[in-house]
Image (cartoon, rainbow, N blue to C red; front, side, top):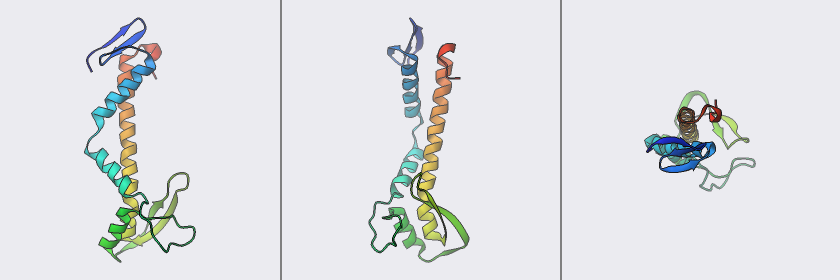
Length: 148
C-alpha cells in the first residue's frame, strides 16, 4: 500500500485513484487476501481436493454417495481393519444434503474427516481475511462510509 488519501469525495489507495467507498473496500479485501495466504491455505485446499469423491467405485448400495476420495482409499489401505473403541461421527456430502454417519473403522473416520478439516481451515481463513479487511476499511473510510 502506497498511501491513502481522500480527494473530492473519492479515495486513493495503493496507487489507484478516484475510488468509491465500495471500490476501496474491494481493493482492501484483495490486499488482505494476498497478505494472508500461507501454508495452512495450501493444506486446506489440498485436504478438500483429496477428500472429494472423484474416484469411481463399483458395487455401492442404492442410495449411497457415488464415488470415493483419494484420502479415503489410502486411509482404508493404511489402517485396514483397525477399529476404534467407540463409534465416531463422520459427514458425507455437501450442504444442504449432508449426512452424519457413525463409524468405528479408523480408516473410514480418517478418510471422511480430512476434507472436513480442510473446510474448517478455509472458513477460518475467510473469516480472518474479512475481519482484517473490515477493520482496515473502517480505519480509512469517512465515518459516513464505514460499515459499522
